[in-house]
Amino acid sequence: MVPSILATLRTNGLRALGLAGLLSASFPLIAAAQDNVKIGFLLKTMQEARYQTDKSLFIARAESQGADVIFDSSGNDPLRQLQQVEEMLDLGVDVLVLQPVNTATAGALVDLAHDQGVKVVGYDSMLQDGPLDVMVMQDSWAVGQLQADAMVDWLNDTRGEVKGRVALIRGQPGDANAEALSSGVLKVVGEHPGLELVADRSHVEWSPDMARDTVENLLVEYDNDIDAFIANNSGLAFGVLAALSDEDLASADQVFVAGSDADLRNVQMVASDVQALEIWKQIKPLAYAAADVAVKIAHAPEADVSDLITNYSLIDNGYAEIPTIITPVFAVSKDTIDATVIEGGFYTIEQVYPD
Image 1 (tube, rainbow, N blue to C red):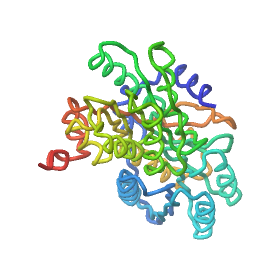
Image 2 (image 1 turned 135 degrees about the vertical axis):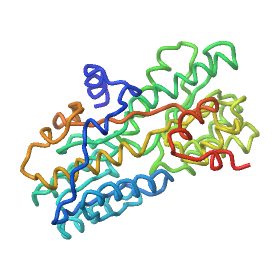
Image 3 (image 1 turned 60 degrees about the horizontal axis):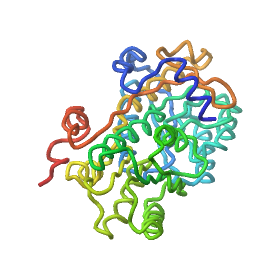
Image 4 (image 1 turned 60 degrees about the vertical axis):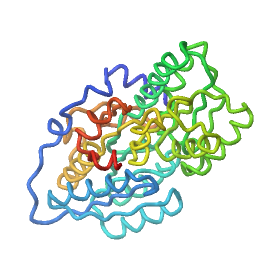
């Protein structure tokens, strides 16, 4: 499924860093209505630190437009998420904003909502082979490309050539977002004959502890001789670094480690030369865009969603071409922290450099 999505993106000429001004062009704020609409916002987990930001920004944006928000998270449990969707529908939500736990089966959750006349906004992770009214997500395909390009530069700088052993540390098995995040890594590795992909491992529930176990075993198998670990998110990268630390290898000078989500502890490790790279997936454009489109749909439930939004692409998820709003991502290295997460207001100088 990922290749068809990538082909669509290439056809539409999307680039990770070319979407500035997306929000203001797509969603002018609408005035608060006298009768509040009710929006369900359901995240797959609160395990990663970033999701506190998703939650607070989404709720604040929707409430500023006169909406009531019912929020919940599923602890990476698909059965629990099913129950939560049913509960939100019973509470009479006008629109459901859903980040699926299981992207392969979540189409059934959309069917439940549609059976009650409720439209569904996909959030962050594109469900596969199922109906969806509109999707709001970050440019997940660009994440792996940015990570792997930085790895190539690092190998040139530290080894003098693009040669070495690479391990890809994925999230949930079969997750469409993990596939998209990994696609750029695999592409770059395939373009450089000197790179050896020694592991491509998935981890249930995006578990940092499982990632640590994976890396511990790989370090034993390869006698600590692995040059780079690329992880689908910050939590997995933290697990990688925990295993490397046990072998006194947790240093950006010795082993390249990249994560994605820009959790604070990971950004601090980038600043202190422990971790080489993070990817900053700006949460505000993502949360604001999802809140805006949800409110628009709630106020115009009979309208075609494509008539309510602009600056979108049609992405094939295996079931249909889904109107999709894609927000940009940025590489965060020690040299670019100030110009990205600090100047962008994601963290303060005091947070990134606590000492």
